Length: 138
Length: 281
Image 1: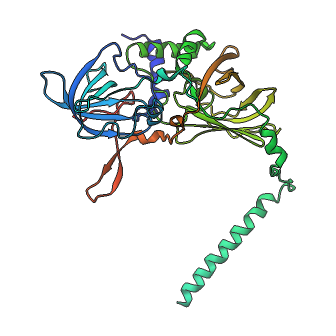
Image 2 (image 1 turned 180 degrees about the vertical axis):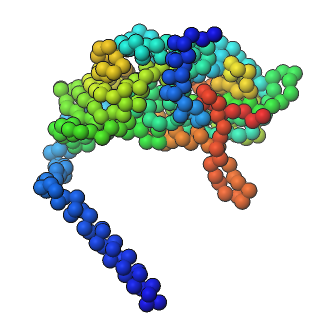
Image 3 (image 1 turned 90 degrees about the horizontal axis):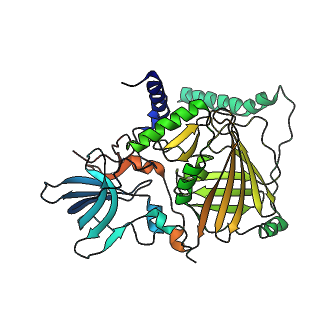
């Protein structure tokens, strides 16, 4: 049972945020369980190389489970290319991949991508924006 | 035919009368003011630009520094704001970060300086410093350094009206006229609308050859109990891979698709409350 004060704060917050709810943009990522890793294998269906967050759709499954579509969220195209590894074409539809992700806490079929490995080429990609700090490239 | 021409002539005549008469009617109750002209820059103006500190390159926010300052330098929120911040902290801990910026409106000033994860570049031209950021579909701050004052009655905007001057190698920027809805955010999930009458004073300087320090003083009497001062660090990169690219935030509302007639379209993309794309059922 919430107190009236909690309800009031919650209502105010809802009012502050209501207009923001239906869409995607820069946001904190605590909806993902960063202390956990879910691994799936599958095939890339789509790559949305879009701002503010890139998304990769993978038809895949955890070991022993039935394949479903997973959505992997990442940072922006600009931030990814600045890492010097990612390109728009680094991951393509049809690629067979192994994926490690920090899963959605609510059990949804999605997560924050930690690592994606192309099974045929063996190339692995990860992206940690903070790794660039303190490294000045001349 | 003749009638059509007559009607057309009448419409044209009315347009001429309205179009040309209107400006005169705007001015009739007030003596004409001499317009202020922004003078064309001289060769000396351009040469003087070369004497300023070198802020070229791509500037990236130090996000770890942002995280540290969020924890170590909380703003002096008033009671009403502090209650919302406490609620946001609880929500964040439980995996429901408050979606302050998921609507793709600009992070705006001063939150862009405080919490952005996106790069920017800074351009010097005579009489102006311009900050261009890689988000919000063209994030932009114009800082006038031509000696002008703030207008007496500023039209509120997301980034406000900024005037600046140089004190040695430090650019001092004073900004007013920011929408009251604009957040003072210290984290992507912690922020309070400034509630109007906010002033932001920045001192910006190269603290190290490739490190730009922003000392930001926020005066927001409707949500803070006293002035709040904090700093943020941006680091420079010159490698070409760091060049800014287009960053249209609203792009994420849509998915690139081809419709049944073969047209490339942007199809609305469903998202959850937190701003993430919803996996298909």
